[in-house]
Image 1 (tube, rainbow, N blue to C red):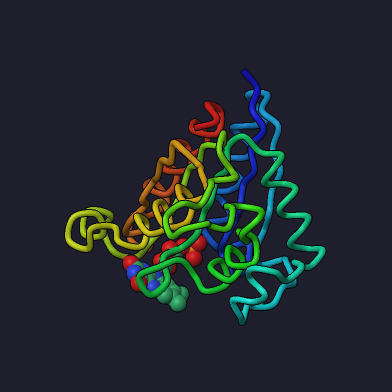
Image 2: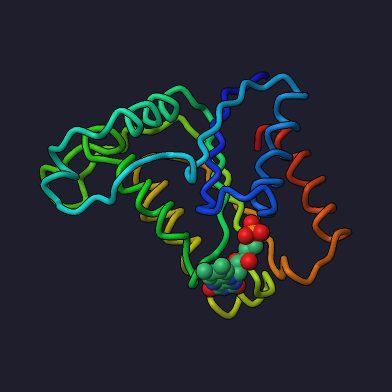
Length: 195
Ligand SMILES: Cc1cc2nc3c(=O)[nH]c(=O)nc-3n(C[C@H](O)[C@H](O)[C@H](O)COP(=O)(O)O)c2cc1C
């Protein structure tokens, strides 16, 4: 069954050489070839400022750029988020984008009591694809995939997205063209399955 897929390319560097962009294109091409509808957000191309106050978060009006991205998110049934690991976490630009995008009233409702927020983005699944210099096993087992879990639990699941699946692509600087090509093929195949 054809699905509506939103791909969020969260690499701050727009340079075509960045591997994350190739992975994003591989997912998109696989999905389109299989008949899925795809929209894309390239965070490095968006003009937005950093959120600076709780007041703005709760009652400010997001900019037109952010509102358009919110519409894309509402449209989507499946959301794919790609980014490189920077200093152990998602790049600040992507975090800044999520702070602008996932506001109360849009992504979750304000709580009457702590812990009682309603998840407003239910009915959507997600796939996170993260690249990094360290080996994937080291990140998963020694560092316990801390930042990945934080994105899954504190951000996406909190807003109602599920299931959430992830690809951890480690040692990207040393796996060589064959290793990178293998991953591109796997991501292309995930795109065709909209998973
Ligand atoms: C600012 C910066 C911080 C980075 N921090 C980490 C890190 O904490 N852990 C890690 O394994 N790799 C780190 N790396 C390596 C990147 O994750 C890696 O170069 C990237 O995933 C490669 O994908 P790309 O070609 O799309 O940039 C860092 C790279 C940069 C530029």
